Length: 53
Image 1: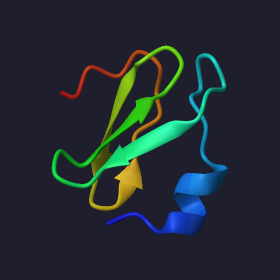
Image 2: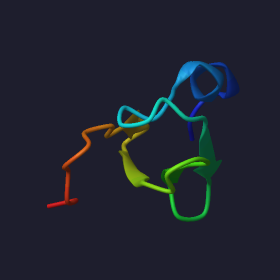
Image 3: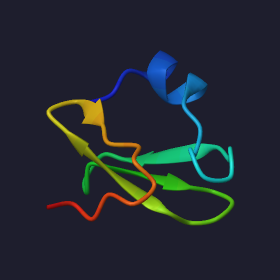
Image 4: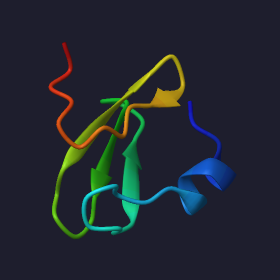
């Protein structure tokens, strides 16, 4: 689970929008462009073209 302090400073690498953390899906979703980023082993994968493989 990501710490609240980390979530507060992270932003979308594409549009710089805020990210919303979904604890059940373990993802971060941009509130502006709606891009979804995976979180693996408590590490956000914030690569714009990452396809999860």
